[in-house]
Image 1 (cartoon, rainbow, N blue to C red):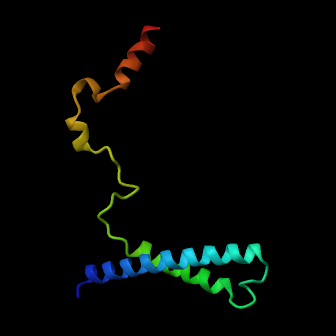
Image 2 (spheres, rainbow, N blue to C red):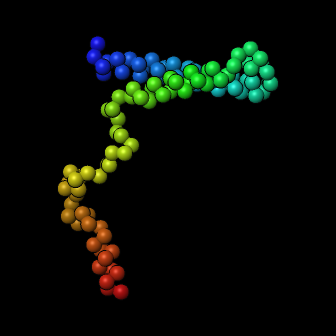
Image 3 (spheres, rainbow, N blue to C red):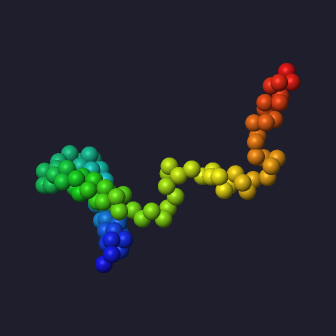
Amino acid sequence: MNRKRINSYIHIVGKEFFQVALITYLILVVADTVRAGAVSNFFSLNILLIIVLITGSAMVITEPRKMLNFFTPIVTSKTIRKTPSRIKNPLKKLRSKKTDN
């Protein structure tokens, strides 16, 4: 198996396991808050929290790069070239108004 396929499998399994673990954790925290000791007397919620953090981290690390990266600029040189010349420099009008006053 190649590396991309393994990352894809890890991402899918991590995503599903993360969702189940997170929902289970939230339900158990609410149950323990409503009735003190209902869960914490039998099971440590910290263990489930660690599982949620590990699977969430694995899901983020193995995320496929097909989606738009948050730090990728949306405006590129190609999009600037495609814009009409009247929209190309909107600050030109503002500069001319400042000099008129």
